[in-house]
Amino acid sequence: MRKIQTQGVHHITLVGADRQSSIDFWEGVLGMPFVFEQPNLDRSEESHLYFDPGDGRLITIFTKEDRAIDAAPTSGDVGNVHHVAFSLSDAVFRQTVERLDERGIKHSGVKDRGFMDSIYFRDPLGLLVELASYRFEPPVGHTHADVMLEAHLLRTERGDYNIAPIHLADAIERLVARSQRTLSSDRAAKDPYAGGRAGEVNEPDE
Image: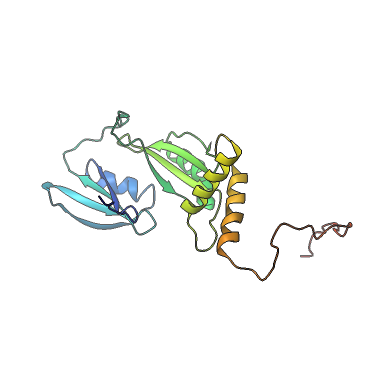
């Protein structure tokens, strides 16, 4: 018996209402370029819209012009999608509450997730959407998942409840130590200010 090894999310497909409402939300609110459209090859009465969420992968929507918009929250039953999450840069994330408020979109406010910050709201069809911003950048040659795995190991070693910034910082240090070489024979932490050599910090001249 052998695994079928995945190499990333290829696309996620959602059932939308009409064509224009899908474009207005995915491109008009979330800024995802509308890159491709063709008939749903399994149901010719539907159209299949493709949007780029920002990483070159795809969010696709099945649309049908006589399908009405229903804002009731989607089912939270077992086997259903709970929410979909999209990544934001910190600069955009800091503007998100204001920009949702400008549109009158109800949202959760900023939620502290330890390793990231999140804001939740529902799309016009009741799907829960998360906008998330990591609190860290992985070292060169590593992914966010690499840092998360290492931070998890540190968290469990220490018996902590959830991942916090200290686990992320220490995880990044561990990954750098393992993957980047040095000429030093001892790369442990040092105190170059021993003996009172640390001076006051002056504001730089403009």
